[in-house]
Image 1 (spheres, rainbow, N blue to C red):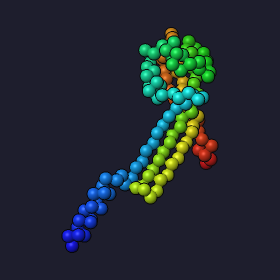
Image 2: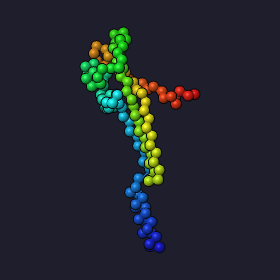
Image 3: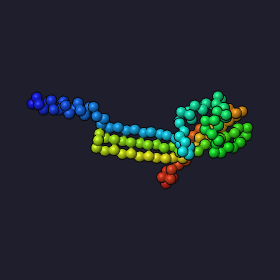
Length: 128
């Protein structure tokens, strides 16, 4: 009886040190072969970030368009989402999705007026 209790205690101790279920997701952005940190995108502030700063950190835009008095820069890049689900040591599932994304930055008087992201639908999403 004591032996069973010690054995069960040992098993529960070992299992409690193990992670039973692990779910993780990592998102990264790339423009060509150059990584694009999401912190860089988040540091673009309306009314404070200049066109020169954007050009220095993001480079030449893929598209430029004049809309009234405002200039619109468009940057195209890829968003990679890597997901992993692991159950103890028995099961592991990994998935990687890549999506085309666009970053739009509108300028008024050489300062950022508006910033937004757009998502192109995957082929799977078009089927309805």
